[in-house]
Image 1 (cartoon, rainbow, N blue to C red):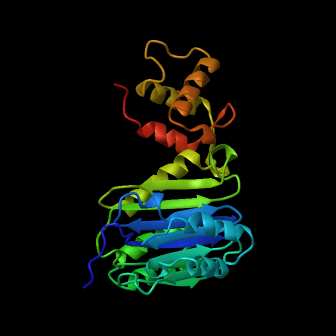
Image 2 (tube, rainbow, N blue to C red):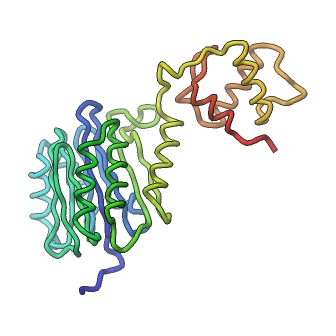
Image 3 (spheres, one colour):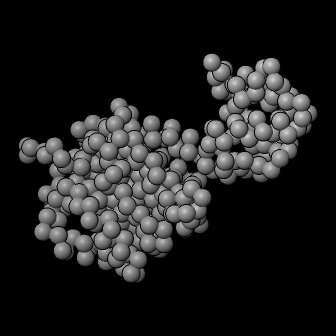
Amino acid sequence: MKRIPKDLIATFSIVGYDPDAKEWGVAVQSKFLGVGAIVPFAKAGAGAIATQSLANMSYGPKGLALLEEGYSAEEALDKLIKEDPDRAMRQVGIIDANGNAATFTGEDCYEWAGGITGTHYAAQGNILVGKETVLAMGETFERTTGPLAERLLAALDAGQQAGGDRRGRQSAALLIVREKGGYGGYNDRAIDLRVDDHPDPIKELIRLYGLHQLYFSKTKEEDILPITADLKEELTRELVRTGFIKKDALPESDDAFYQALTAFLHTENFEERELPRGRIDRAVVEFLKQMPDAT
């Protein structure tokens, strides 16, 4: 058996596209420290790229530039590998602006190595237990509904359950881009989460995604609660318990109550779920009730 270089990105990944949300993304897991800093690249309106095995990180910016120029996923991939003398050791998955997919596995990538494409996705991996990992990713992506992030995470998790990287587990990452999808609308990084070193990185990535949704997703209409007298009394008790209101300084006015409530919201980074005075997000209420007592 050939010796596997220690700096090889032994990885499985899936790149995908959501035509309704106009989102592009990459989910990846590897027996490699900080895989999120190396494999995933994406740009809203252009596409997404996963570069792995003996990863050529220039494939990211170069490939996205080609996609922005109007190259299809297959055309961009062909151009990238044609100009690379070490293409036999590269592995790449690409989704273009229209959701067309392409994947490439060089003939010298370490077994098991390969990839598949389907509607709006490309799944690939190297140094895997077997092809079942890639097949499971594709099948899961196809049958899963919901946001692109959740479909990619489900696919990645299924790939691990089917065998995964035969060298083990260490890091994982999820990158989703959407026009003005970033914090405050200032960039396109709707989700950029990384688990750099963990015994179960995919499960940890899924946990972080849950937190991301709690903090940064918008309030659903059905989760908007009016702050009635009873709810205000309950919130006051919880704000006292958690230290946002002093026991000996209970609010004597609505202004004082809402000042304490705003302090809680901003301290816990719930600006994205902050509602006009007199209303509150159900998820925020549940979070407050689960917070530990003030010390």
